[in-house]
Length: 517
Image 1 (cartoon, rainbow, N blue to C red):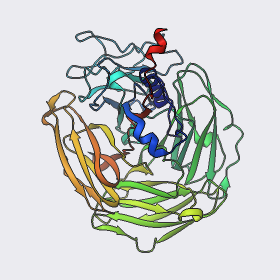
Image 2: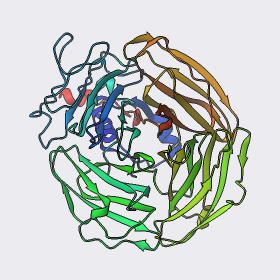
Image 3: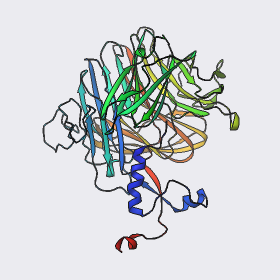
């Protein structure tokens, strides 16, 4: 996925007006010169898009909005969410500006307002404190949202849905996504036991045109209806994958590419017997991938991988365990044929310990970019639940995840290269409590499910912010766990860097004098 998002570009442009000069290219000298002259400043606008949470009448969904505290931000700013109903935000019912004490469909204690379309409105008072709202039923729409000023850097929205029965019963969660132009989803399916939708949400004033390609074990699946899909402005389209092909594929890779405009994309994977969850897009194709935070009590782990280029790939498979990097017996390597999806059953890979999967496909000129995700099962036959762990980018500086509970929250951290020092902040609660912080030293090549800090006097849910202070690369994920009638329901969200700041070159001279002439 192309991670240089328009929200960052907008932030850079706005900051350029303040500094007097900005460029995304290095000066004629060197990158070192750029590093000396660039200022790392907070972005001024961020976007988040939440897919429609469920088509079940038994679904209950909680949204949590959170922005970590960032130094140097403008004191002004706001967060605005609106239903993706084909109307522009100015004309939609998601007015996001209800004051304290005004009536809406939200509830007291940190929950605020709502829209006539059934979409919650989340109006934070200040960074560092999350706000939450809930909704229920099958009519809850997709949401488009923006955060500006002091609420923009690191803004995240968590969508967590409980479904009492039926296909996809259990716990479904996703961090609302960023608009972009390309997405990869290894781990989707058109098998008879699965009902998978790819949700496409357009935040802009013009229509987006999107192609959806499916790759199975034999290569690309023929489809004419996946080309040139139009997504209306400020609207969302759920597309049932089985309508794009007649093939019955247990494991396939979905490729979403945008011809014009931009969208956010996510796959809702529902299993009639094994629950379901959201499959988030993987990081860009790369020769090294990290899939962090496999639950230690996973009963079955399946790796689904794909090489999108013209070259085959030989993946070296390693598990980052609590004691360091090890090679799983019998799964030392996986061969990927170019353009074909490969699935490998790794069994109970973690064997009761925390773990993250590390995949490499060569170095230098022999490296082959790949994408991958894990399909994870917990529980025993008849009472199993499914979740997904996609490959993700590291936490270079900071990442946050919202919607955590006092119980049933697991934060998994992995350090690669060298040992790393990490600071984790538990925010104030959405309905009360005081933030607290804890620091950890992570062993190189190891994964640790850390003992979490919990806000003092916690009421409601809280956010976790992970900051890498020093050392090697850090990868992170958060797991939420619940139990419904003996079913160990869960959902996993990875934590890529929030890119809450952007490098803006400093002005070589004060141009304000020219503006006065």
